[in-house]
Length: 336
Figure 1 (tube, rainbow, N blue to C red):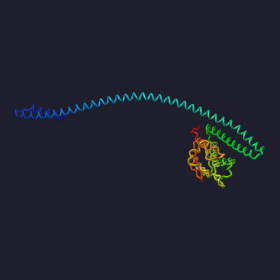
Figure 2: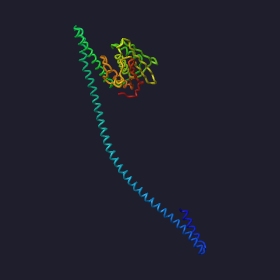
Figure 3: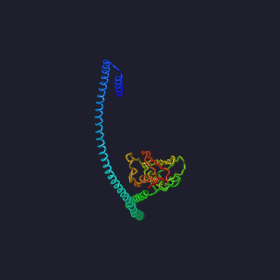
Figure 4: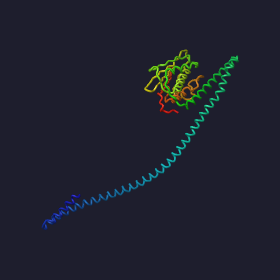
């Protein structure tokens, strides 16, 4: 566009500088007039384009202003909502803290209640067991002796439940104190100490360790509690319908700094629908007088205390298998 203007201006200047006759003036003027007309047409077109662009820019500017206002209103609304939300969050946080404090207090009161109740109930039950023993010596009537025996069994079961509840209460608040010990020797000793169970003589116990006798680092008392409860559960739940010797097998595997113990035995089948219930407190898979329903609950609680886990892998009419996984204890991991 600017080149055309410059060319027309140069032609006009050239005509002015030449000495032309009338006919040449007329021809030059006619050409110049056409160039100016063409230039004017371009100017009109550009003016229309400019007007349209101006209108478009005006509309865009109005929209920008409108959106800016909407954005500003949105910012104000968000600011108000943030203040309300912050207030509500603070209120909820305060409620949660208060609820947590109340929960801790209630939990502490419940622990105290369980401990005191279990402790206070043990006295009468122990006296009742003593009376049953004396009565069994003095009473000669067969029917009376049967009732005394049942009373004694029930009292003994209640006494075992109370002892387990007391230990569970202690275990929840116990801090693990790790030490180094021979894992195989401790397991063998735990099994020997379960000879008071009625099914003990009907079981063959075997330990297989891929690394032989090796030392393990964790809380020895809590570890023995886990093994005791798993073995006790297995002995109590062996299938005594068939007149045969049952087995309990332990396989020990060391993986880096972790230990996995597989416990297998032939016992009462656990229904699949009960897999997620067996670790609940007082859940029984069979109506056995010796079973308190606390063995697996205590096992899981103790395993968590040592940063480990215990799961039921399978249970069929031929074999039931549990897996216990425990890491070498790390003092940096606080357990409360």
